[in-house]
Length: 390
Image 1 (cartoon, rainbow, N blue to C red):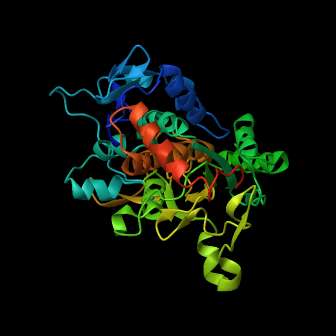
Image 2: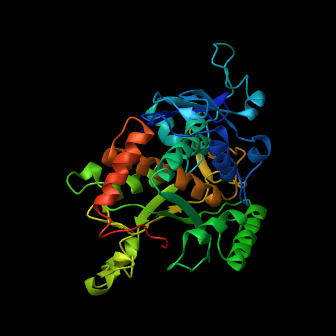
């Protein structure tokens, strides 16, 4: 499954093209809009969320509620474009107002140098996290395909600022489903309250906050990905997908970096067998992936998001118009977007896993893919059955 997105933050629309979707997959705009709404929620979001009420429209690839096997094109209107028609006009005309004071932490400066432009607007419009609306829409397509073979993708916020939810082991899928009931998508209400308090404090001080989130994937059969080539290793693909989210600066699988401080006797997940659970582990330090392949346990991924680089009290920079000392320009932005990032995390993971499932099972139609997956699951049924906890 290949995805291409297009569009600028304040342009007319954001667009996603999802190629190689099997024919016959039930898909409606409600499937897409549900995740788009989840992406827009969360305490600490900025004024843009009061303007945009994201909703997708199919431009191709879906007929009477079923995919056709051709590329699925999703169109998401930018309602704020009405306020930016002149500034973002594609037509030649009057010299546009330029942004020449790049923000530390954003792509402004690197992009201005790379593309030889004296206007950060040309960079920030595409580098903006608004692009993730397209990937959430595309991710909903991947999510639907995974659900057809019994795989589900969930997420939760683990930390914002110094407030951290310490629950880690034994979480079930039903626990993750509770995340959407909370403004911070946190499973501990006391920690959530602390997170919101820190967000409010940062807002009052003209500052921003980052944090961490976790993505859990249930029902993944063993054997997705490959040990044979570096670019087919599932952990590498999933970590790359998470780090592709704007603001995410690190990702890990299972216990990740903490494994570096453990002995092997404690770090590795011993293998057991009984007639009820079949082959299973009592721990999941590996996060469901070994040697680049899913091992049949729940896949656990975490990502760290840095604070948003647009601050109410801008940081020091250099005005590229005359190389004088300056303060970075201020664009309307969120104070904290970690809850939204966790939903984007679900989307990029769903897309990556849907592609891995297609590579494993093939099929131009959903019926063919389900038949192939069913045959494989029957083949390994004496050894493995789906897991229900993390």
